[in-house]
Image 1 (cartoon, rainbow, N blue to C red):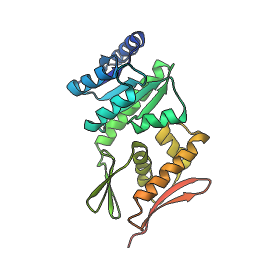
Image 2 (image 1 turned 180 degrees about the vertical axis):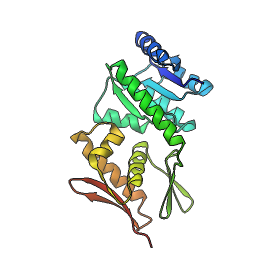
Image 3 (image 1 turned 120 degrees about the horizontal axis):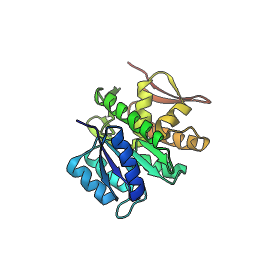
Length: 228
């Protein structure tokens, strides 16, 4: 079966150009022209990946993605937007984005990102996405930390950071690498945001004193676990 892409874009000319390009690459493309239409088509037919504009009539891309994430937390989403401030990017990732592409964009760049996300999706599906860390377990797919039977939800950004630290437990992860993992860009303006999310993770992990996230000043962060 062909890989299905749901492309949600209210600019009809752009929708036609991008959809034709994706079809030429062998993808099955379903088009929608606003967030309500996109949500309905996803719920009725699903998709392997979603590419969506942010600013759309009736329902914006962020709101559409949040609704889709309720039933499908792992479907990859690429947002297209004319906005590129740190706040806009954070809002996109918090609503469930996996990537963010600023308009105007090169079709070749979109294709590269589509292929990269689909490869990552296949890789993630092949792995066990539940991590054990002391008294906690962490389900990356559902973005839940579980402590003594209690489920503690974490945001999309917090989940990405924690997964990266867990994959490198006991080793320092460069701050630039963390920012590239979360925001796909290393910018000075993102460093304060990164520190804020690290602080939030420390708070939710505070119930097990064996767990620490250490700030290696000038380098990055290291997740450690002092076993008994």
